Length: 511
Image (cartoon, rainbow, N blue to C red; front, side, top):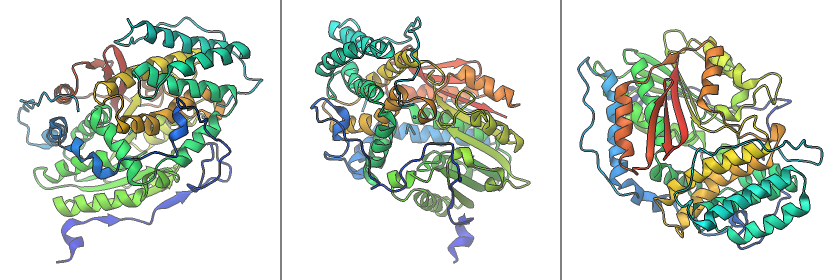
């Protein structure tokens, strides 16, 4: 039998690539071997000096995480949450007997100069405190980092350099959360002082482990923390519910990465009463990502083809290798008769807004999507305020945000665990350096709080699509598989996932 008749997978075109003649986004290296001028310091406590060396765990080494009861429950919950809205109208039951397993995770520019304006420090009240805040050493290091930032902001260079030397002696990439975080914060501050933040950002991207090594780091992060699973659950639940009666579905994913989000949703759609719908997926990924993920969009296509064959669901894949700000409506090939779902997973904050570009690509993108009349739009974003904040408040916000994240990792992996070190370096450090060291168009990590995203979506003509109570209950059940310190808050129509009292990720849906 012809396999195409049986599974219906089709690649609609060869991978598209687009490079504007005058790009407004930073130019990234086009090859993984492009030369860079930046050389990390060789200090034993310098966390960036070992990006280009050291043993890397293979993808196969991560299989132990797949065996955790939390992972098994997550897969069941994903399938359950996506299948329930598509079943006959019967009262859904919340999954019971979720495993209470012991702790065993999609996260990816402004160098300063002498004429960068230094803003006075504003009053700041941290929303998060380390569990070890009673420890004098932790408090001392945290205050020392703040003094370093304040000295740099006031252009007191001699004082800054003295304080940084004290800080270097206190940080440790194998230490407690604030020591590990401090190691990267110090490097970000030094990069800002030397106006080398963008060089570091590009160098780290160039020197990322390629292929299965980086996949393994992202896989570990995916497994040990619920941040990505939470976003996938919330987004997939909204899409499944909005498209429950549709026979033709078109999903546009503005950052498809490895395509992990769609595997269980497609499985659930394949089991839908009355037969599976025809699903078309437009997957957008920037042209540089293939060097970090090996096969890039080709790998996503192979995974989708495998799902199509295994679960007998017709899938059409349209890969777009293009920077998200340059995607046009013509590239998306929206067709009549298809229910359109648009997904923004940790991606919109990379688009500049009116404070950086008078054309305001961030809001323009939302207006373009609204013009397509989507059935549902889902957004997952870091719950942090680093977009327009001046340097010192931004540094304090990053310190607060990543303190919570590093402590959540600390609760799962041992401090001397090589995999934990690699996860923090390759999945988190570059973003921190960009937030601290860069200004203007070179700072691409520009997070906003949910209330600001709500304002942007509303101004673009969207209305909130309610997330069901059932979705919320499944996510709460999932969180119990990780740690009692994770929190889930429903606020203003969105779900906020946090560590203790600090919200870290928001998820919402719109139409």
